[in-house]
Length: 549
Image (tube, rainbow, N blue to C red):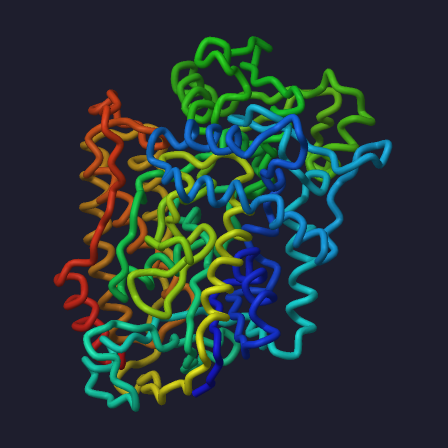
């Protein structure tokens, strides 16, 4: 068993920023299931929203966020995040992140994205996430108090409730309070599961875009933190609100390549194959409408006209302008034979961001003591029914700081002895085809039944399939040694169920959830909150009876 003060599961911006903020005083373990830089944060193109000049105001940033969130944003949280945006950006600058400056070097260049009333997006060309990720990960790897475990995936959380259920005696009794004590972690290189005990555990595992067939997310975005927190007894909220980015490059050889929101912010126009614009017919804000509006408009035009894609055209801008603002997009498209300075870019919507997640308070603390969730894994109340562009990296920073301050305020306590992972009654898997086939089936029916536009019948069919597949995978999980693919599939099925159950319970259309059977929006906005039932906790114990969790 390994022991740390702080265990961080996930190596994106949320996890990295928290690690650096606590490492001077705490012994930290940061777990990455791939390489440390293979994260959704690294793929982020646009930038970070913050009020950085006198022409803008925090009140306007708040209002833009509330409008995009379609009535479901927590106003207090939204104000908190907007107020801390400038200092969060300043912290990144102090860490050495090189944001793009104005040509005359008078200050930082700010761009504008859909839903924003001002230019307030600070960025590093069109690869902001990469610039931030590389800068912070190098600092993390060099810090003497931070242990980085790459190619390790979390299997499940260890809580006092689960330890007591296994009759394993811990040296400290927390009474009736359910607390997180650490996690089981699979070393993908050796196939062995290690036990890590920690005073505080942080879920920073990102979103669940890989539950869909088409996504802008990296392969690691499989909803691990949300699924683990749910199994441990945490509430989740607003899981029906999956943001589909309107403009993912449509090309047979372009895997999950995002065309930044900033392309439209800098004058890019959406067009049909014949060159006709269509956004003016859908919304008065045209190409600068929020993402849910633009994604639905594209989906509508594609289905109405039988199109494989639509086109995003910024070819009226000079080549020098494109190279300055979108060098990576220009280079990648050119590799595929598309010169965006001369021809439009073929684009389609793709699953992009999980607006819901594990319910947390203003410190990032979940329903279980000593367990935090930050970044896309969490539901803070900031995004409501639709995330405003470039608020995601900002949320990682603000809640990373809030959680760090809460952790640093605690006195260090000895970590308890925890039960080891038990594989004495399981065997090697005889076939892996169940995993690959189920993974493919799940992602396809989620795309077809639980996509941009939904119906009651589609949702019911999806839930029926999820339950059948979950039972098969639970049986497989109970009888065979685990693998990275099996853990991810188990988590994806759990997250898919949460998405569908949430979508079924919402009898209206709001933000990112659009139902043809319930097209109207209710006057009273009510969050969707799911609580783990006794059925799920019993099911988990039954199917995990060969294991100590």
